[in-house]
Length: 278
Image (cartoon, rainbow, N blue to C red; front, side, top):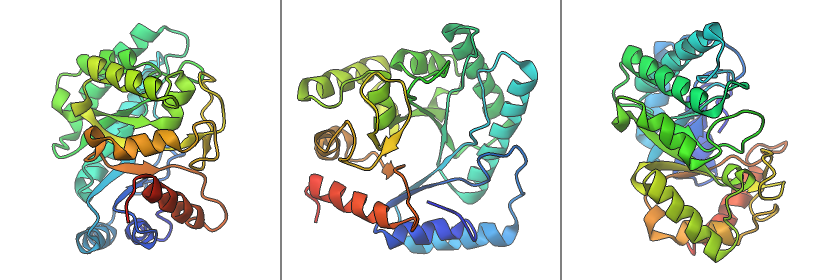
């Protein structure tokens, strides 16, 4: 949800579409410099949250951060930015921070994963944000981005010292674009059995529900409204009805359109029907 006009407005916008969870940016996601959180804004957000009845929240990190970069200067800047993101979540009481694992920029997947893990070790040690869990997001695999395969996420998390501070966010569009089959019933079961075997379903703490404009295995990250892309509606019905995933918060990252919330309402209405929720 947009935070235009103040962070507390993201809570109000979530309530306006009958959401029970919310994801937001705590800062401008396309700039390195972040305006410090002022006490009045923190207070307003916390008050709105306490009064909302929402059950969980996540923030998403800046798109500029690249924890796996072979460029030492960029990596250090990314670590500092992640520290700031973690501290902002701690201040606001947001329990999850969704993080892109980064891109190895031609230096190799294994080395990139190891750099990302070390960067996470540094950021978690410096931030002292004990109540915030980093969620490594599955990615579509464009360019040299890491996290296309479950094994890559496992390698990163396995090398993090504070493993209890790191979970996973699964994005349906990204997993589909990365080549996993979510469309067929057999493919769905095989994908989640593989996820469980490699990562463990217990560390799946957030799901992004997005359809995909592109075909499976395209490695192109283009989100689409639920049921209007290559995934169709059935994978979302399976996710929403799967008892293994009932407790995992799920949010949309579908296109907003001019109004900003009209399509959110439509997508959520469809998801509720697919889940057989009234």
